[in-house]
Figure (cartoon, rainbow, N blue to C red):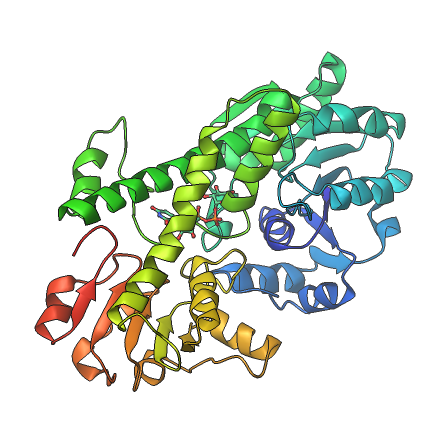
Length: 433
Ligand code: UDX
C-alpha cells in the first residue's frame, strides 16, 4: 500500500519507518529541508533506540523516501498526519497551526477516496471540524491517536498496547476508512493487538486522558515523597507496596524530579484549557498535578542550596543528566535542565553531562558548560545532582569519583543509598533518605 506520513518529527519519522518495515511504500513529508535530507540519507535526526537501523533498512529497500513536496504524495491511498501540536505562546492551549497547514497543503493533492488518518494529539472536537474539509476534497477522515513513548518509540509503534480508531458518523465512510486502516496495520492486528472502535471525540479524548492519568500518577507518588520526606518514610518502599495491588499497578510510581518531555506537560495543560473552553471545571485537579510537578524541581534546588550553606555563588555543581528521561537526547521541558538553569541563575558554576543530550547541547551552544562524562563533571564539584537515570550513571562506582565534597542528590532515586554512603558520600533521595 502507498502511504504518506506528513510531519517527520519524532512521531512521524518513527511511524514512517515502521510502516515501511511492515512492507508498505512510504513517503515522509516535512517542510524542513534539512530534516528531509538527513532522513533521506538514512540518518536519524534524533537519538532513539532501534530507529537508526529501521530507517537505514527502509531507505535502502527503496520503500521509504522523504520529500518536502506535497505533490509527490498524490497517488498515496493513506495519509497519516503526524505533525506537532506545541503549546501556544500563551502557555496553555495547543497550537494547531501545523495541523491546519498540513491539511491545507495535502488536500489539493488528495486522490479520490484517499484516507486521511489523524495521529497528532489535538483538542477534542478537531476531527469533527476537519471532516467537512477532507470530505470536500474527496477523502475520508479517521482518527487514530498515537501513544508511543520516546526511547521505546519503535517497539510502541510495531507492538502497541492497543489501536484506537475514531470513526466518522457517516457509516459508509467509517466502514471504508476502517477497512483501509486494518489493511495498513494487518500484521499488528494479526499479532493480537486489541483494536478499539469509537467516535471522533472519544478517540481524541483517549490520548489526552491517558497522558493526564499518567501525569497524575507521577504527581501522586511525588506528593507521597513530600510526606515521606517530612516523616522519615521511604517512598520507594511505599510505591512497591501499593503498586502490588494490581488495581494500582507498579508502573509510573517512580518518585523523583517529576515529568517533562514533549507530551505530558503540554498535553495536560492543553486538555485543561480545552475543558475550560467547554465551560467545565472537571480538570481543576490538574492544576495541583502541575504544581506538585513544579515543586519537585525547586525541592532539588533548595536542598542543594541548603547543603552548600545557603549560597551557591561560584560553587561548582555537577549535574548528571540533561534529557527529560534516559535513552533519548530530547531536552524539551526537561526537569534536569530546568534545575540546572535555576542554579545557574543563583550564581552556581554548573557543569552538565549527558551521554546523548550533552553533545546536542554543546553543538547548539559552544559556550554551554558540558562535560564529556560523569567523572569529568564531578571532578572538584561541591555537590553532585543525578537528574536523569541513565544506566551509566546508575552503575557509577562512587569510590572512583573525585569531587571536592562527597554530596549527592539523587533526583530519580536511581542509585543505592547504602553503597554511596559506605563510600563516604552524603546521600539525599526524593522521599527517602
Ligand atoms: C508519554 C506517554 O508515556 C506516551 O504514551 C505518550 O504517547 C507521549 O507521552 P514520553 O513523553 O516519551 O511518553 O515519556 P514517559 O516515559 O511517559 O515519561 C514522561 C516523564 O515522566 C519523564 O520525564 C519521566 O522521567 C517521568 N516519569 C515517568 C517519572 O517521573 N516517574 C515515573 O514513574 C515515570
